[in-house]
Length: 298
Image 1: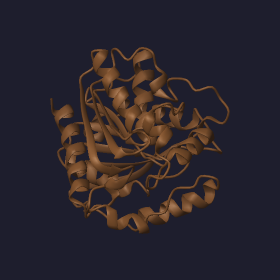
Image 2: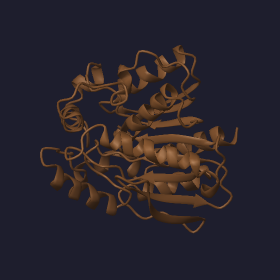
Image 3: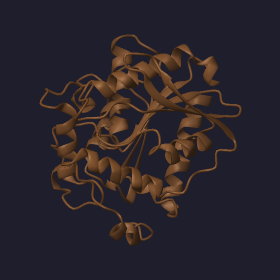
């Protein structure tokens, strides 16, 4: 493990999803302990998008933005909202210069698949239709997210391709949750990794799917055809149950003719980039922002 991350392990609780309500409160408290980013170089707006249901979003609009990203928070589809995602979303906006639309999608188990996915797609459609209002151009809209949110973003790209929906310029997938089957070595064997381990991931999928058979929109690793998808940046963490499925997905994208940048972060664990004092975490945010900037400015 990266030596700057290791001292934080005793302070980091392991996510336990047997009680989603209690775990949401713990997750919110953990997020609140992260120092707030500087947002003086951007406009920040809370609003709702669509109806039935209206989806809460927080929009970060840097001055001079040309492109935008629909950004989906992590939390195993069970935890998180626009408040817990605020530190990461604001830093992504600063690092990339892009408008970041952080989505407060509905959470499982109260709202299993496809609720969160439908909310995310509704926001993507709205963003495409309101690009000028967001300081973006209609052909410069990306999708992205962390963990569960990365899986949602990958699913959005599949659906938009299949339905000839809103054009997506880029996928920014940070440690995405892609495969409910847990058949890779990292997903089977990482039983004591920090924050998220094999059992936590299994519980998250159980809440999200609620007994349904997984489709590629829920678990994008199940998709048999990855051709025609937008270019992607895929980041994996070495000590993360999702590691191998993320690398496998990136390789399959490449084999399908999709341009991919893959970054495997040595010595990191799932969500460790929240430890902002670590140099490797700072590099991760810089890389994410730089990849998005390059994609939207191209």
